Image 1 (cartoon, rainbow, N blue to C red):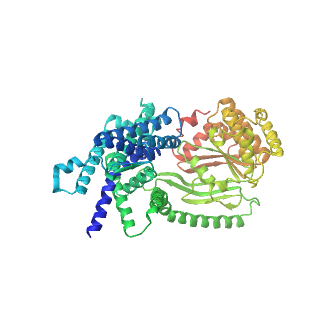
Image 2: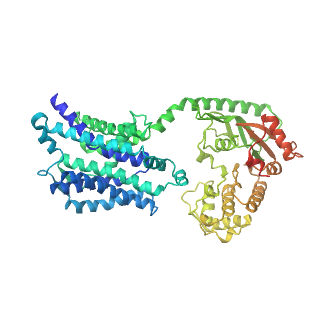
Image 3: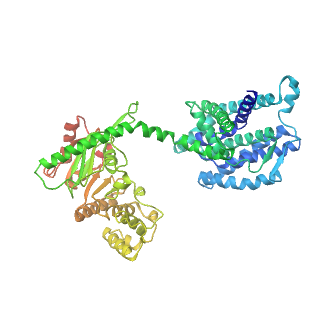
Amino acid sequence: MPALFTLGFDAVMLGFEYALLAVGVFVSFRILHIADLTVDGSFCLGMAVCTTCSVAGHPVLGLIAGTIAGALAGCVTGGLIAAAKINPLLAGIITMTGLYSVNIYVLGGPNVSLLNAEKIYQPFKQMVGAALTNSQVKMIVVVALVAVVVALVAAYFRTESGLAMRATGDNEEMCRASSINTDAYKVAGLALANALVGLSGSILAQYQGFADVNAGSGMVMIGLASVILGELFGTHRSVTAGLVFTVIGSVLYRVVVQAALTVNLMDSNALKLVTAVIVALFMSMPAIRAYFASRKERAAARQAAQELAVSALTNSLTDGSSDTKPMLQAIDLKKTFNAGTPLEHKGLDGASVTLEPGEFACVVGSNGAGKSTLFNVIAGSVHPDGGLVRLADHDVTFVADYRRARTLSRVFQDPMRGTAPGLTVAENVALAYGRSQKKPMAIAMRPAMRQLVKERLEQLGFGLEDRMDVPVGSLSGGQRQAVTLLMATIGNPDLLLLDEHTAALDPEATKRILELTTQICRERGITAMMVTHNLSSALSMGDRTIVMDSGRVVANLGPEERKDMTVDDLLELFRSAAGHDLDDDKVLLAD
């Protein structure tokens, strides 16, 4: 029993020695939302600097110097991110790599012993004498040191400066609009995080009695494991709670590891592998919980979809009015976001749409009417809570969006979303054409493909046939949207979804893109749905006008019904069907 107690005592003490490492990771990862790999280097840097000072007879100065050294390492990473605009992950790797050599220079070799050097806890041991054991004194000192530092960090985050740092991690754009220098706070935040990491390395060096240049390897994973274990027990409604539970997580991590080693549950050589698995598992928990929580809902939705599919098939067999099968059947679609919470919102509430082959429908409605949700469900990027989606007489309700995209194309409102800016015009079009060919190892830009791309670009009338080898990112918004439209239609999809694809364009470009859209769909017989805020276009373009409100289709006007209809008639129809006026300024001003 005494041996087990000693092992547990040592594990708890080791947990406190690493606690400030975990707190530093918490600051960078949870507050700044930066995965900072500088930690592996700054931990060893703090250890090396503290060791050098301790050998010279200044252990307290060693703690201070190790903390400052860690902060400077964080400033380097922050400077690379803020000034050089380097990706945070790469910036951390750069600093960590450089610190390896720095640490060797500071130590003067691969490792240094502190066997005969004075330690920070020794003066306290001399004060208490034989009243307490050496281990007890070490425990009291490290717990007190961690408590004081955590209290200071928690107090800082309650200041205006600390609040600004937290906001920088939450919403950088809002902060800059609020006159907050987010670059400065990123540098300061990383400096604080790595100062804590450097202090942790300094404490460990004095407690274990040596420093090694490889001691920092895997420290970021240990810190993450501690943060995640702490989150299992804390709700983290405040930063203070987050800091405290991170310390608890560090202690628990060491206790669990020590217990596993004691009962031979794992080999000591597998420690880092087990740590990586723990971090991966617990970081995946939100996705795992969401998956299992929605299994019953998905099963119920699938069962309902199958029943609707049988009903639709029965109706098609008994209804002899048409021998043509619809290209799209979206039947009784339902989708609720944030169900069971104060933020619950019904995106779709029994919406149904049917389109015949070659039919062109315009969809209108106010913001929040469910237009984008309808498109997302049809495209497969959002799965419905209930209802059925059939495309070309195939049930695709729960088919993955990337599989559905082989026969379904979509053009987004933002021209930036529909193309790869770093690829040339020809490469973008070739990439889109390849999705329907299923020849992944074929040469993408073969002569026949270049000729096809050139011919299709000529038909656009934007002069892009002379800019085939220009990166798409250098094109104007109208030109880019024209390329996107070509990419969406080059494979003659079964269904084309146009999600306000002219909203971000100037009037001249809008006119040309709409004309081009109508021309391509008519010439190739492509079935299409277009969301628009222009009521005149909704009545003049295509064959059908669909009006949505509150997740429902409140009006579905065929060619004869909308033949002589004016915008005022459409507004009155909306008022009568929805029970209120169409009060979306974007719609009303679009005409």
